[in-house]
Image (cartoon, rainbow, N blue to C red; front, side):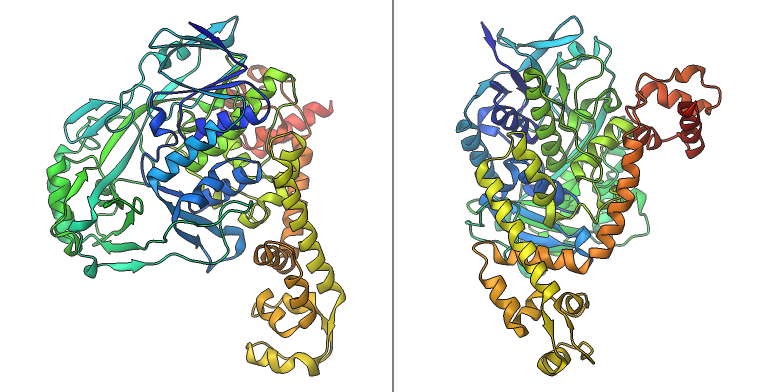
Amino acid sequence: MTLNYDVIVIGGGHAGCEAASAAARMGASTCLVTMDMNKIAQMSCNPAVGGIAKGQIVREVDALGGQMGIITDATAIQFRMLNRSKGPAVWSPRAQCDRGRFIWRWRQALDSTPGLDIWQDQATELIVEGRRARGVRTIWGAELLAGSVVITAGTFLNGLMHIGRRQVEGGRIAEPAAHHLTESITRHGIRAGRMKTGTPVRIDRRSVHFEDMEVQEGEADFHRFSFMDTGRRLPQLPCWTCYTNPDVHEALRAALPYSPLYNGQIRSIGPRYCPSIETKLVTFPDKGQHPLFLEPEGTDTNEMYLNGFSSSLPMDAQIEALRHIPALRDVKVYRPGYAIEYDFFDPTQLKHTLESKVVAGLFLAGQVNGTTGYEEAAGQGLVAGVNAALACSGGEPFVMRRDESYIGVLIDDLVTKGVDEPYRMFTSRAEYRILLRQDDADARLTERAYAMGLATRQRYDRWMAKKAGIEGIEKLCKETSVKPLEINPALENLGTTPLREGCKLIDLLGRPQLSMDALAAIVPQLREKIESLPDRREETAEAAEIRIKYKGYIERERMVAEKMHRLEDIKIKGRFNYAEMQQLSTEARQKLQSIDPVTLAQASRIPGVSPSDINVMLVLMGR
């Protein structure tokens, strides 16, 4: 049987779902191929979305018209804004989700997307004609043909799971691995490697002594992931914290000879920033305890996730160690933690559109590019899906800059620097993080998404209304003066210096002791302005406050970004024969020849290419 589409997406995880949804919204006839329609957007590890820098990515996906933010809000059972003690540049939303409801809401979203079909099957072969991807063949003999193919296979490509010395083939616990697809891709010159990740034990809440743990409640304010009219509709549940101890560590160390990570059984590289409990013991041998977070998996289940206890040790060793923790002395588990090895493809062989440089029409997104995390996968999936659709219609490629989004930082890091371990996003990876705040993702991206047909008119209208509200508050603050006699008593009560003479509200709001809420409570004009907003008053007022308070920092960083744009405008692809440029260092010649950067700015970010190498190239271009 042969089926024809514009875009075929292989894999129904977070990258695949966003890719298929985006491609269909762009008007491309799309088919999502998944091994199990009942596990669409499965949360293989923690049923949580967001976190440091990851929350910013989800806000960007939402601002572009993606689904992850909307579905997270609808299924959240705890929400927190992380890093509130620091500046707003690094505030990061995070939500614990109901795992089952998250899957079902994604399934509903895909089923209701016009132009999108779902096909339950397993792709085994990439069809390539004349160095261009033309479709896939499946394990059941179907031939699916398309103008673009997007591979988002997660950890399933030749997946191998480890618990102690036992090994079982699979892409996820109780799910088969995908064989042959990697080999059908690499035979065309695309480089592949192996990576490793892991997941913790799942615990029966009925066996936990919660009286020996610390409760961690969520937040109930106006913050959420989606800029649309969504809210948290499910009961909000607490999480719980406890710690390992020397007895736990002794039990774990005794089992290290049976650890696949340390007996040579696993040879691939795992994530540095989400290590297993046994890696923590080896890396930090003098540390007497490590924090653990017990998190609910849903409102209607006893299953709980023990964050911080990822492991591939034998199951009896894991359980014995856990029972040395007072709160878990009678612990019962649903399943032990395990590690999984899987194939990935060298991302330096990709363009910034996530299309392969080797095989035209082939796009890759998610863990197959060497990343880790649902959020990183979703951001890549959206970009790959949009560009796969544009490749079919002949539209201009959709590329995101480093000063425009964390997604742009993520993709540029992958294609420019490559990976030697699973890539995880952090705020420290973004040099323009003051411009890439979680509160202004819609300001950065929604108009662009609407112009290309990715975001709906409803989303665009909501952003324009919010934009008008922000500008209205800023205008009032610039024009409204306050006098010492009117405001000094309130200022003294708020712990800030009284005025000696009148000033504008905008100058008063610059004080760190004063918030928009506090100022609105004592200035009637400001309070009336905020109350007159038709919608999303708190969100709009917060966005205006951040823009006012951090105006100087924002403008300075934007100037730096604009200077870098000059290098971005200098196209160098195809202009140099790097192998013959003896003026460059040997390492620079090798790296430039391998990656073949599009712009001088991209060349400057390649590890091993020094500022002097860039200057040489500028001089040669001047000649």
